[in-house]
Length: 334
Ligand SMILES: Cc1cc2nc3c(=O)[nH]c(=O)nc-3n(C[C@H](O)[C@H](O)[C@H](O)COP(=O)(O)O)c2cc1C
Image (cartoon, rainbow, N blue to C red; front, side, top):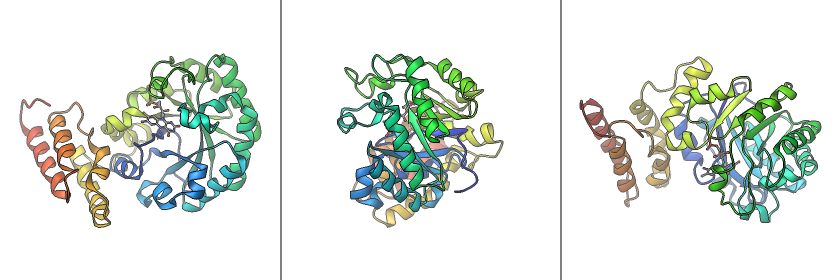
């Protein structure tokens, strides 16, 4: 394990979003945020194309692999593979409400089965003894009373030995709401997460859900051990420029957003040389200048030109040149 893993500020696991290209790009904005993979099921790790599913580049450290599953033995084997691959942490998903996940009886529906989650955690921790094994979960599901479900869940899993809990501070409704609605409609309850921390000061409790930026994460996470940004970090990656200075008292890796893009160019060049299409690597960069002069032009230029056959770094250079002009112009409309 590397010594700079901290839960003070993390970027959430987000399926189809936080792939390896996204994580590598986020490293041009923050060295210190703990980055999470998309959820990968234990079965996929065991039987799928391992390089495609869990491959990552060294620049991504510190990086955590999120696993989904409900079978101790398979999760243990997948956790061991993740640890051997060099991940700094393994995380178990107890928060995802999608039908596909429910039919496999894992994700958020495991909030109803704390004893099972405790045994899953034990199996995974036994198989990956040198790195932290953590759990990301909800307050409860469906008609559960969160006061009860959250505390009972954490108690059972902590009794097995888990010390780090990342709490998406809302319930999930498994019937009737889509995964997207389940990230928006059930109300956030940060106060309950703070009560959990007061009841269990010995545990590392990380707050997730609805945090807009690093300052917001610091405000709502005060008294807790850390905060996790999801959609804000993907849709407005510029927010990550605040992580190193505000949370860790260190300089950000890049002095400006334009410099962050320039810092990322060698990664893009290596990917192109290895046959990775530009648009797959550039997609997480689309929102970089969101809300800033030229931001829409940047998004349009890259989303139109990166998917073209044979598109290369010239697309990024052209978009950068336009951004440079836009940021120099006194009254450009973004
Ligand atoms: C596109 C998308 C995919 C997600 N995929 C996962 C996932 O694979 N595993 C997981 O635990 N949570 C997943 N989530 C939930 C986020 O990790 C996070 O808990 C949620 O978005 C709330 O945080 P936010 O309000 O900061 O976005 C996903 C969220 C989004 C928007």
